Length: 488
Image (tube, rainbow, N blue to C red):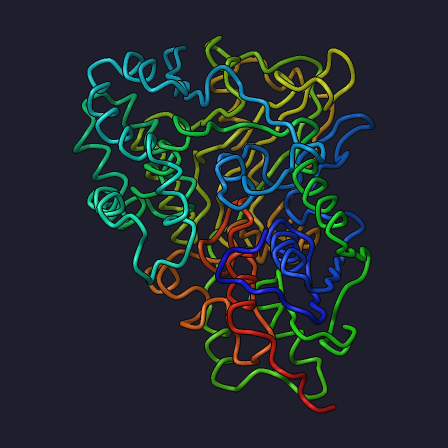
């Protein structure tokens, strides 16, 4: 239901893009009483949260996101009855596995006590870092998943987080942990930032992903990421909202008359959309600000159809839906520094998901799928297949013998399948200091046009499947009211 500050609204709203953020925005507007129509360029809703047969019939692969700590921990998603619309979460026995060259692996256990025991000499340090954040996730998440500028609801909790979060991940890992294995695991968590791990703020990603493991887990949705999008779309339909797929909006003139327009697109697409409109609704100063927006490194991704489970050197890797392949902290540090500086890594840090160990609906009986990617420079044309598979083989000898088929997605092919993935950037834009504070500009969700808003991951809080960009943008639009339409 609408929050207390959001009075009921009449009128019509159009939403461009049916990714999780676009659907979240549409739901907030429909809850407030507006007539809502969503326009999606692709044949299916979901954006980067789609599931499709990319390799062989019956093998259902996640096009983008596969494991979802921020979806299960999203304050907005948790306010919706998505379970009534088919969304079911599956938690693997261990949250994460991180193998090493000696044939062993360290696991991140969801239970904080088990994690403390697993980390041995570093167990107490791990608990001291994670427990205040994990036990108060419900308080912390709304503060984290909002614009960075503003007074938090829980300033003391956020201050505790900030003391460590502002540091480079490499600094925090070497300062707080004595064991190389714990340092490496933390570096892998922080590498989800897609940043050079020697940069300030990268520790924040390790802390948030680590705390989420203990607070809400890193689950997979039964049936794949498409289940999240389908549940959102079904709930929107229940509220009376409409979704039109296979309809690419190339100009604001392609839309029906509406009082509000929310755009689940990045600044580049917004500029193109406005530029194709007879009367450009954006001010020139705002266009210049959007033009200065920076995109982050891209992803090189491979989906696999497999004859059997991955033959990990360490059996512990079979307990986790997510496996981080990068070896030591120093190796992960070098890999992420290379991608951030415009060079493909020789030994890339690889993020791998193996959902069919825990959800057999995703592949034919006895068969499996896997999903793996590494970070590369934005728009890179480098073929990383041998290097990526080399990292998997390093920790799972005989992996290539299991492959029935593979589907390789370069940065350009990712963008071709989802225009929001500019240059293969899966986060909607880079996370430098300016874009951390002012994303994509100082206006954040607002544009220079009174009735047009951005609601994609190019707005706060950024990338991830949580719907908060869309929900925050729609709530702001409702609070500001619906201005009259400009004259034709």
